[in-house]
Length: 148
Image (cartoon, rainbow, N blue to C red):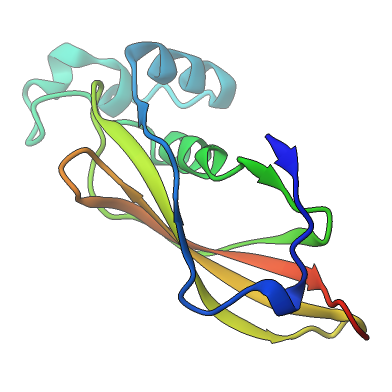
């Protein structure tokens, strides 16, 4: 992790970056359940899940979001602030042993209500080892302009 100043003018529509991968483990399931209190059987009960359509435990969607977004945090931009996330969707299930990575594309730029700043939207896709999108969302940023 390192600091890199990227100003509003530096962001280019359709620029894309791809993260490294991360394999999801049973420990991830247990730790996330403990952090959130979400011990639903869909995530924690292998025997019950064997009777369900997916036949195995399904990762918490919020865990895949957290890990997938965490993968994108390879550089710190002191010129930008996260405003949050929109349009979050859990597209496909993730299972123990799956490996995910994130692909981030600059999808929108616009003016901010805050003088000297613009807005940038990063479209985030979290993808499994089969090339399937498992989660999507838009990350909203407020970014300092070089000249205001």
